Image (cartoon, rainbow, N blue to C red; front, side, top):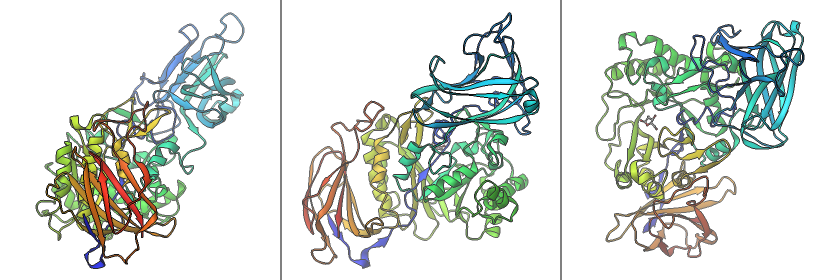
Length: 621
Ligand code: AHR
């Protein structure tokens, strides 16, 4: 492998090359990165009409001790359903309540992870015409062990109207399969609505799950594309993600049923929170909005104006000043400064749809007129022919076998350099090569990404998909990060992405493989300055996709002589004994990068590449 570091042959990689795509799929958000523990907190998931199903809430007690029903009597206009609980038993008299009381419980998203010593804030809305004494408790899965408890005691006059109550619960034991209980031993009728339980300690205090978002931060993503995917489109427009329904105080959000991935979200993770997440990760937000097209219905171009206004308002919400109509709502939500929204995508995978082009042009013109600097992403692939409409970027999605993915490294070699830039916003190996996240898939994707680095004069952004899966609701396979209430691990495809986290904004060096049969080897070389120690590094990444060991000579030219330093040079390898090896909750680190000292660092180095491996040689220069 010949690496030439001379300036004339080098090129700057875009600052935004590698980022992430977050979609609300597989309970990635609700029951995932959004740290809310209660599922269906406003009792709305069963639909707006009553009587309505309150799943996953369940009842503690039998018909002789309480009657639970739903009513449209909430104080919140956009989510009217509230829970009515008529308690028939008492602490004294003829009908004595069972020990522990009667009431309701919520198991969260397949069990709440409650950790000893941590504090949880429970907020709920309550109403009653009698005095109340309600125990708010975190317990094990059948209510027999109490992990934390507090009582809400109030006179009738204090709760005769809807009243907000708040308690802090400090857990005295841990249990990954806990539930939240609201119980009483006092006769009477109590209404509940909007019940939330959140850990006090969340990522940057913004409500995100620490462990899951730390996995994202470790990728150093330069952009966050959100909130989907098909989630943006919906099977039907009435179920699509519409940003205005997801902002403001959490109690007022109606929530919605995402009909593509088939689950309800309370929309605690709304448009504002997505923008906040991007900011917290030091990444640019890339907002994908619905352009009047779902999987099964479409708004015609002549009627598209309200959708255009919605998109313009969404941009104003993100970046308008605090005196603007929508900017002032953002400011009231705690973010007076604008978010750095520079990119929007008009729809998702809608290019072939009847009204796409017509609608697209209307959105494009209106957005460019109001915000000339906003970069617009089209759903139509411009990699092999010119687009018939203006765009700054075009979306490119690829889900395929391992061999195909590896050969896709050359997909952009012949793309025109004059048109819009490519945004590879979804890529992954799928099907049997992927298992549930195999080494094979990761190696093929690594080869593909090396190809994107080498074509980064025309490919400006790339992100894996999907990012997360809650193991209890796997709607798509594979995914980069797997979790349940208390455990998480990265698949090899997750770890593979870490090899690229210094690439965005780095310098790509000219590198040439001189081998007889090099079809299973692909390599790239970059230099960059590390912000932590202010030192310059050279990284050579090589995928050996074949099943033989490869002995390779690497020569580096174009650097000042003796500038490659032996001390501090490292070699990081992602491989395993079987190419179909995966990580799991049992063996979360079976296939992870292993770092060691690189003792051959220098201008001429002999290296050995294990079969089916991805290696990064990092040298101080
Ligand atoms: O990543 C999963 C799905 O794949 C996305 O929702 C969609 O854009 C694509 O078809």
